[in-house]
Image (cartoon, rainbow, N blue to C red; front, side, top):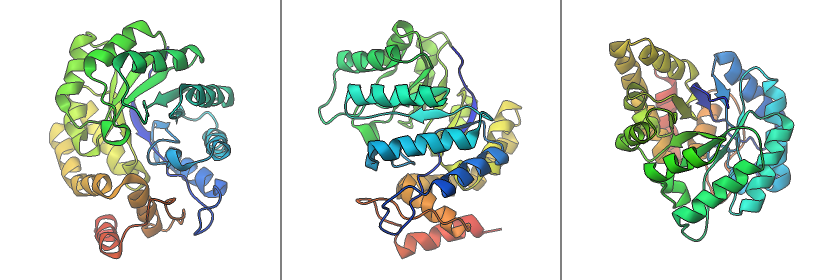
Amino acid sequence: MNTFEGIIAYPITPFTSRDNESIDTVALAALVDRLITDGVHAIAPLGSTGESAYLTEKEFDTVLDTTVSAVGGRVPVVAGVSDLTTANTVRRARRAQEVGAEAVMVLPVSYWKLTDREIASHYATVAAAIDIPVMAYNNPATSGIDMKPELLVSMFESIDNLTMVKESTGDLSRMLRITELSDGRLPFFNGRNPLVLDALKAGAAGWCTAAACLRPQSCLDLYSAVRAGELDRAQDLYDDLQELLNFIVAGGLPATVKAGLSILGTEVGDPRAPLLRLDPERHEVLTRLLTAS
């Protein structure tokens, strides 16, 4: 099974009207093309940034189809396929494989708190339904379910095509523990923007980030500097990005990234309710962060 590395960019899902009634496929394709032209290493549609939790199944398929078509095989597509039910997560994973995604990302989402046994069963069922790699995504802040390193490594050892982890708790010790327990065999990706420098220095295979939609070159330069061992340069790049990274996390990914794209001249619609656009005060702060020389 192949794994991935580098900057995995998370595009938003553009909507065509202020009522957010339909997907703007033209805007989505243009954004994906721009990200690839900018040099990102992979595209990950239908994550938290892409508002996947607020899409119908038809809309999910539209975003998936549009993204894979726009990518055109130039970089890997890691499709978010998470859903409340195992059955629909399987449906989405199979659809992702059918249309050409190279991997899927699965976040365990449930109204009820899942046991480790239930989480492992969920991942095993999804993975068995497809042939492409699965990225286990740990983000208790959004899912309410926390997968400890011991569980993640156990699933890696028992599920053939579960080959990588996106860790978004912001706890560096979790990442180090994954490496220790797996003897370095289980690659981890940083999913917590403000932690990126420490995570890359600790051996993260890459950075899963929506910040690439707004400051792609800075994200790429930071990753490259750490890989080249240019840690002073990496620190300078991180210092320049840090306020924006913190702002994106605090303001919510869809709202902040959509507002940022608008500030930079690309209209992609508002977030879908119950999410709201940034208030004027926060919009002013984001404008400063993105337009300061």
